[in-house]
Image (cartoon, rainbow, N blue to C red; front, top):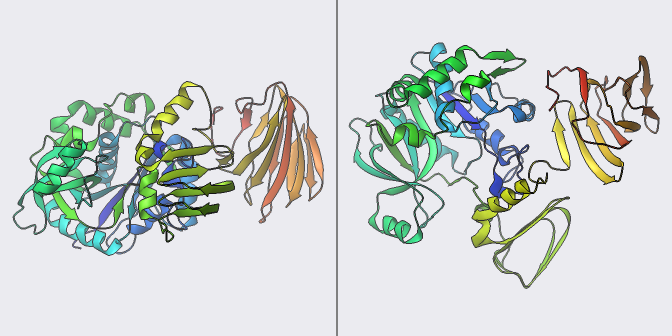
Length: 476
C-alpha cells in the first residue's frame, strides 16, 4: 500500500429487521452476533494496523457513550467520533468525514464502511482495497461489488463495464440497479457481470467533495457549515444540529455514484453479509445435522432448517421447518425464514402503538454502567443497577418517586440531602421524593445494587439533573 488510508465507520443504523435483539437505542452493530466482539468492534479491528490511520466514527448522538466504551474495550485509537443528532443517510456523512480529513491531509484516501457488516475473509478484503487504491489515486470513486451467490432481491446490483486503464481488477460502472424482483435478479445472474452493491467505498476525500459540490451543491454547503460550526463535547465532535438536519437525506449512490463518470467497482468474494435479516444470520451460522441454528437454551425435535435463539427462557421446538424464533427476556419473534425481511413491519406497528419494546432492552446502558428492569407493578418498579469502577451518576432529584437502594456487592458512596454515607453489601438507604442525591462507585471494583422505586409516576423523564459528568441533557 503506497499511502495510508483513513477508515470512516458509519454507525447510524437501527437494524430493525434483527428485532428483538436489535433495538433503536441498542442497534445490531453494537451486538456480538457472530463472534465475541460486536460488529462495530470487528469492523474497527478489520482496518487497523500498517497502512491505516486511526478511523473516524460517525454515529447517532444517542449511541455515543456505548460506542466510546466499545472502542475502549478493544484498545483502539480513533481520530474522532462525530455525532449526528439527526441521521441524514450516507452522502452527508461521507461529506462531513471528507471535509474533516481533507483539512488534516489534502491527499487523504477514505475507506468508508458500514459498521454492521460481516466479512469472513479479511485477507481477500484487504487485497481488494489494494486493487481499488490504484483507481482511487486517479480520482475514481470506487465501490466494492459482491459476487452474487444467488438471485437475492434484498440488495441493489452493480453492472460493471470496461476495466480501468492502469487499475487491473477495477472496472467502470455501467449501471446501478435498484433491488429487483426475483425474475429480474435471475436474469441478471444469467447474463453475468452483475454484483451486489455492498455499500463500501474507497475514494480520495477531494475527489468525493469535488463531485458532491458539482452534483449536490446545497448538501456540500450545508455540510461545510455544519462542520465549521461544530463543537467539541468531551471526546465527541457535534455537528451543528440545525444546519445538518437541513441536508437532503440521500445515500452516496443516489447523490453521487449514479450521476458521476468517475464511478468504479472492484468485484470481490470476501465472505460478505450485511446481516439484513434473521435469514442471513441463519446462513452464516453453524448448523446441526438437520440444518438448525441453535443458540442459547434451546431443545429441538423433528425440526429442520430453523434459526432458534434464546437469551431468556427455554425454547422447545417440535416439528418446525424453516422457522425463525428469537426470544429475549421481554419479547418473542416468530416468523418463517422467507418472511424475515419484513420484521421491520412489526417494528412499525409497535411504534404506531406507542410501545417501547422496539426501542429499549430491559437492560439499558448508560455511560456510568447499566440498569435492568426486573419487575413493574402499580406504583412500583424494581431495577438491578451496575456502576462501573470510578463512575458516578448525575446529581439529581425526582418529583414523583422515592427510591430504596440495597447494595448487593461492592461499595456505594451515597450523597442524599447534603449528607454522605458509605454502604457495603447487605446495607441499604432511602431516597425521599424531591431529595437531591447521587450514587457513586469510588472504588476499582464493580458495584451492584437493587433499586426499588415507588410513586405515582416512574418514567425516566422524571429525572432533573443538577450536575452531570457526561453533560447529558434531561432527556438522556
